[in-house]
Length: 128
Image 1 (cartoon, helix red, strand yellow):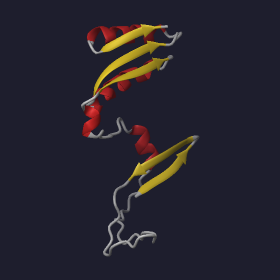
Image 2 (image 1 turned 180 degrees about the horizontal axis):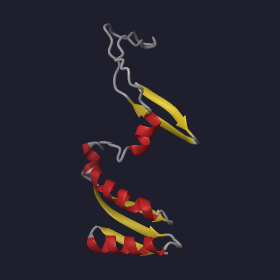
Image 3 (image 1 turned 90 degrees about the vertical axis):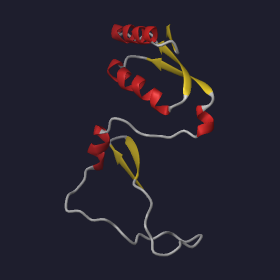
């Protein structure tokens, strides 16, 4: 079961889980909700998503055995870089990361990317 909603201009889709049913679903027939947990507390899903720090996605094992190049062109966005670079290893994939400073006027971007690449042997930094 998914909840789809919009907040501002962004569209969100949240996976809630599988519906429980006492009988088998017939092909071609729409499913019916037979059990819903009810609470007295309202939950603001949009606020929860805004606070969420990471999303989980499990890549199939066959993808984890292959080495991939991840190319990340960066124009400004200094405040997002640390979070971005911490999430890439969570994929469990073998990768080479190519970071490109796309002429960001914020000098912190190039400094951050260069320092990060210097610390990691699988990271390449290119300044445009």
